[in-house]
Image 1 (tube, rainbow over the protein chains, first blue to last red):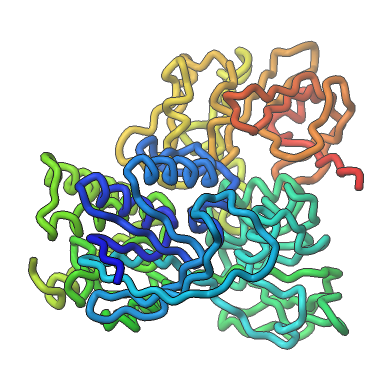
Image 2: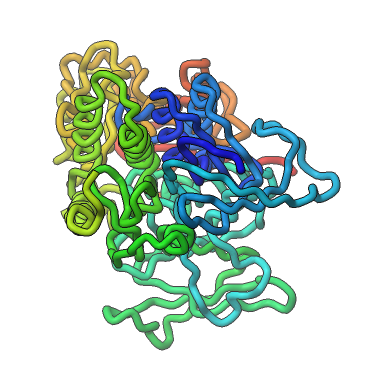
Amino acid sequence: MRKVDLAIVGAGPAGLAAAIEGAKRGCSTLVLDMNPLPGGQLVKQIHKFFGSQEHRAGTRGIEIAAQLLHQAETEEVEVMLGAEVYAIHDRTLEVAWAFTGDSSASSSGGGATPPSRHLAIAARRIILATGGAENALNFPGWTLPGVMGAGAAQTMSNVWRVLPGERILMVGAGNVGLIVSYQLLQAGAEVVAVIEAAPRIGGYGVHAAKIRRAGVPILTSHTVVRAEGRTQVEKAVIARVDSSWQPVPGSERELDVDTICIAVGLRPNARLASLAGCCLHYSPRLGGWVPIHNSRMETTIPGIYVAGDLSGVEEASTALEEGRLAGICAASSLGKSNPGDDERIAAIEERLISLRSGPFCQPRQDAKQELIEIGEVQCCKE
Amino acid sequence: MLQGVKTRGYPSLQELESAPGYPSPGRLEKGPVAVIECIEEIPCNPCEQACPQHAITIGEPITNRPHLDEDKCIGCGLCIPRCPGLAIFLVDLTYGQGVATVAFPYEYLPLPEEGQAVQAVNRAGEPVCPGTVIKVQNPKVNDQTPVVTITVPREYAAEVRGIRRIRRER
């Protein structure tokens, strides 16, 4: 059985940041990701990021992914792609591996389906950075081709360069809905409307302003009633909702669209953590069921750590910081530390507090604090 | 608070005027100046380091809104492509007799060309007046956020924040 000091599940910003810190401290480090490309959601983020200079603000997400991968390579982190971890027990990861031939981002697509192999990997420490998953929305017609997650549309458009449709209805005016609408406009589609059931736009005002300038209406207090079409979406029916979220009779309106994108939030992708036995806590502010962890990012299973959207849906900037924190703490628990790590941890914690301040992010700070307080009681000490 | 931007998707004039990055009427009369339409407290600060004149301050915490020192701002427009929110514009009310310029980020293809007649739009994307493109800047440092400058009748300068997108030929 392959043995490593540190196995990380997920090659997004949290996983890669954790890997880099672990490797920097002398841990043999392996990152496993089920996708054909490393970088997680960063590879489809073609917009410039918010945040501070330390978080490479102003840099496009896809560039951040490239920088992280380069750094990981320099630190001799191994990234294994097409590798799906389907169970964890006794710090052994069971992996179904579709061998892709190489672990670089440029691995060729197409061709015959590669043979699947099973691997077992024994890791002294495990960091789960499995990210988030899109929430679904059920309405009559929701199974018609053309109804898809906004993230799926973004992957089609920005990673595989396939326009998902010509005329789009975006459901949800959080940051994902607003950003993906903008990117679909850039890709040449028409966004007929963005609708939002809440009376207020959830995402950043600047993202909303960008698409408003481009002529896209944003209809708050509106929901999708049904999708119509014979073999695919040909029409969407929307309606105004009242203060108890019920469609207002007579307010229905038909929109001529071929694609309905659903952007109604993300939830932590906590299935693997749950399988591994980590205790979960339900936190609406963090997106749903989330693994309990302490201030060192360690879960209720000793030796298993979490970082990024899995430990509460937030941003790439916070994912990077949590990844760093988890990497440093996991390495330290193996007796592998660098001089100045205490200061580094304090600096990360300070940056996280700063990123989670302001009216937009403070609720997450509170939820995160609550989670960590539970973790401090339930997770093992050292 | 923030009724405009959180319900309509763009800030109301009142929201803008109360924002620390929105220049005063007096400063606007003096010549080109950055107009920072960032009115929500979000964690973001690249504009601070973008300004060679140190006219933009965020400070701590990072969720502070950008403050424009309008006397320091020389209207160079270098901040425009550095704002991830594409929320910085440059307005010059002194460009010519009755003519103002508005510069804005424009991340769509095809790009307009210098001299091209365009439809200037307001914050809601509604056409408000004709405009003429006088500059399209896309140097490497912009990292693919081109900045387009158009002339418009002066009375529309406070409203115009973009152009109707040019349809791509298929």
